Image (cartoon, rainbow, N blue to C red):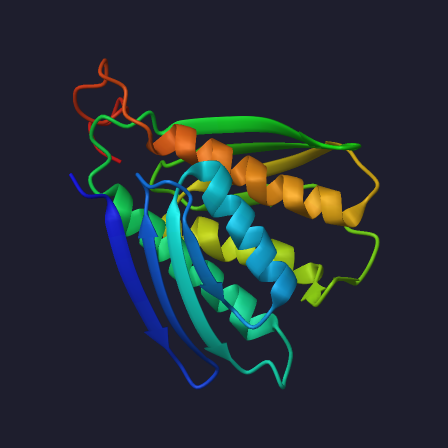
Length: 195
């Protein structure tokens, strides 16, 4: 089964084309117009072994809000579509990821029910050309359109770059685990019989 999705979203604020292959090698082609955001998405794809192509034409003359949030909407949609009926997948994934002094926990449940929770607070308004308040908006958008539970806990850390990068990489590892197959799971992993 080819677990790949291509999603396009065009509004007055952004034009986005995204292709996600869950069973990839971590290859990327990224152009969001926001350098640090590209760097985070590259880490997500490489550490999750997802092939990811993103081209965004957003209203960066306003700010990065629409570009980042809408990319989250499109990525979440691609995750949901590429996972398909969820038969045989582990459904849950988690990772505690260290990056120098930062230690971040991420947990994912592909439950079909959206929920986002995070205790991560940044101490600077920007990392490179990324507004730090947009990290929450991005992951919130991903969780709701992917229809997943997504949780972050910061266990330690003081460098905002390290914390942010640890979040994206921990999410990659947790999602990779959640979408992986387990031969013991015959149908979907749910007492309801569906997700």
